[in-house]
Length: 224
Image (cartoon, rainbow, N blue to C red; front, top):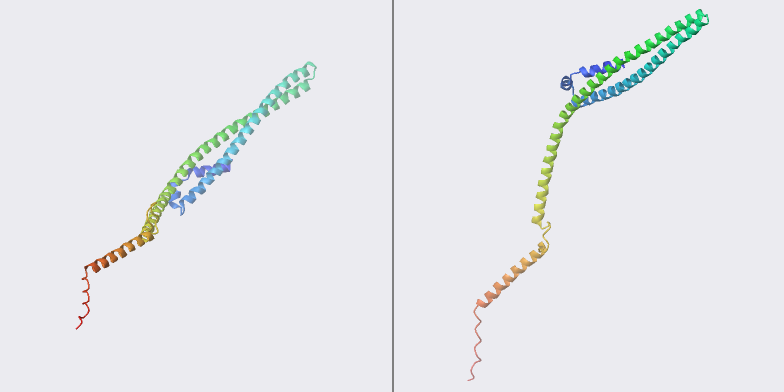
């Protein structure tokens, strides 16, 4: 836990702005730092949970030793009642040894309190640091996203213009779709050609009508 805590403190005390200004690829550097924070958080959460389990075992051990130690007092009285002062002394010495073990277990459990508290404090600081780094990554990504969106919009506008131009050319060439019931370009050409032909014929007929009629041939020569 000590090594992880030291590295975590280094990460927490790091100056993000300074790191970003010095990094050749700021976003990549920030993501690496974010990854380190997440790894440290996983390790610290695991160590804190392990310390809490160990603390619970120590409290249980202390309680068991303390209760067992007091049993030796009754045993010492029994020995005295039977005139076995030597056994009574040994019982009391055992009681004191058990009490000392219970006190040691209680002290060890208390020592874990500070370790758990330190781990929780570092976890909170790392969480805050991760939030700062996530915000900086978002700040770096946002301009790129805006530029990409602008580029996409420009491309789409350019494509739209090309499509509009193609559609206009198709309309001119007679390839564009026409409304239902409208004559096709080919039929229009045929109809217009027919009108032109009709006009030419009408003009020719008018010219024929306007021309003077040819003189009739003279009657046959009179007989002598």
